[in-house]
Image 1: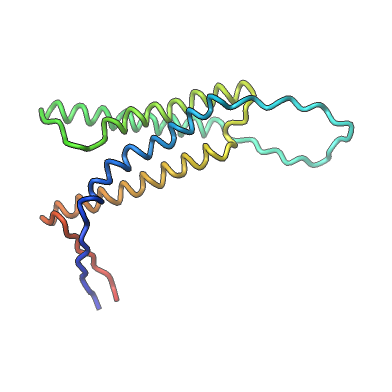
Image 2: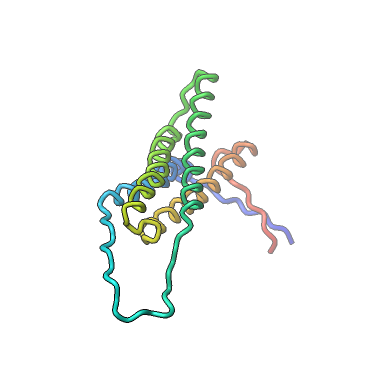
Length: 171
């Protein structure tokens, strides 16, 4: 049996897309800035006893730097698209947060790639830091929730509803 439920989406949720746009790259920017205070690891003195098996974790630096650069480029292209569409339409969109999102996103992810590579070369174990992993994961989750909110907003606008969203489920 198919049932339709009206789920009211308050204005606050639609407006929260602005907060998500700004908060997502801001978390990565805070993690990037925290790298400025990261000190290199002291060199270990050779031990008299030689271990036979040593767990050694080596991060894939090329993949990490490539993905961070790709994310930074996507923020840059998003900003360029925003600027071009604004110029062509000759109307500045209200409260989108894209302009702030672009600047923070490029600074955060390009800065993380550049500063992380520099600190990595100088001896700091940057890519194994928990705060970097948590910040990038939270930014990904916030971006995923932003995509869901934008999808709901587009569906509401296409259906002609400003506050209502019709969900259909099997029950």
